[in-house]
Length: 158
Image 1 (tube, rainbow, N blue to C red):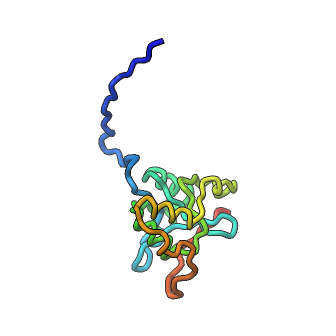
Image 2: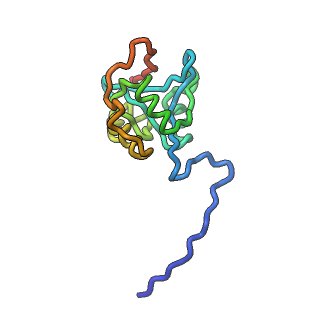
Image 3: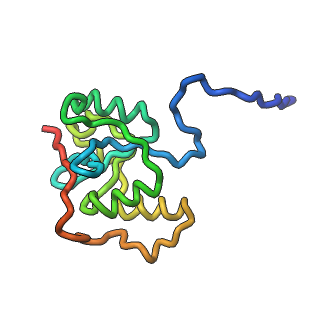
């Protein structure tokens, strides 16, 4: 038996494609403009708050449409860097218990969102490691950082 190697062909992405490259660190949140600041969408898994995070803009937009958030107060897909995700999880979403990675809206209703969720501190730790930041100086599981902050919206699938 003989194995032949063929040269890899360069492929070009489709024109107008908004997908990120595999090496990109961009993620997508669902958010709306709150009073003077961005308000991320958080959902409920039982009594715990969960922050949905998406790999692609199209996935976040699909969640907005299929989840019924399209006409509900200006929710939209928002591109977020690793630094912005850290800021969200240490700021307005400091009480979130976990991050759901690329969830489908049905997962909230049938209780399977836990299959695509990662604990908040673990998610933050991985973000820090990926960015080459020191984790020991950051309060990954900190309590309230101040009482004057407005809590972001939480929506429950009922």
